[in-house]
Image 1 (cartoon, rainbow, N blue to C red):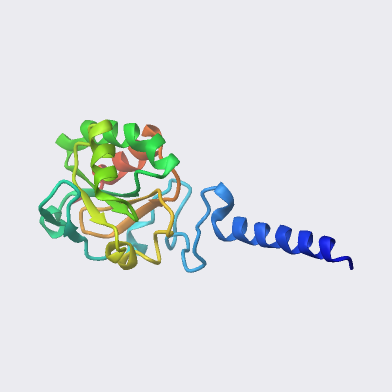
Image 2 (cartoon, helix red, strand yellow):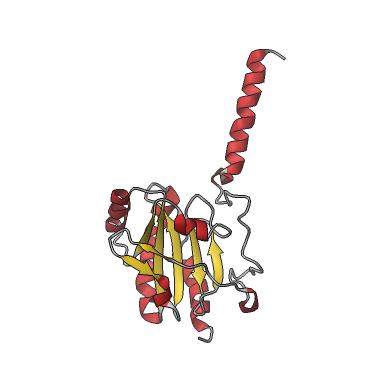
Length: 192
């Protein structure tokens, strides 16, 4: 086989492998250990009897201070893993802000987790989209590591946690208002 053709084939194979491992832009998980939540149904929610406790969530905030999500127990929680450099994260930001504002009075709390980002860029993102909820600054990936079986290394991913602190749903892509509002309404209707 001529050297040029072999080089071209190797480059094509490498590109294909990189696209497959990165999810190819399809929103697919980027890590082989990321599996769909156990027992997820067509409604997007995991049946109550199959839900597992969410990992501990605490850390330094993008805007300063710190957060321990244990203080939010008893509320429905939306965890959004994002980064200011992530195009789908930018596209979904206005949707998250809209749903956060619309559901706050109903007992829904939002917490962002800014991953692999520069703090100044993260602050600009929060200001630009008037984000009404705190975000943990996770440049080194400590929080991401706690969620490693649920959240790919590339954002965005949104996790819904029920009032009892259990993982109730996961969305690995940018979310729309309807995609987020429908499962939240079902979670809010569940007994406390």
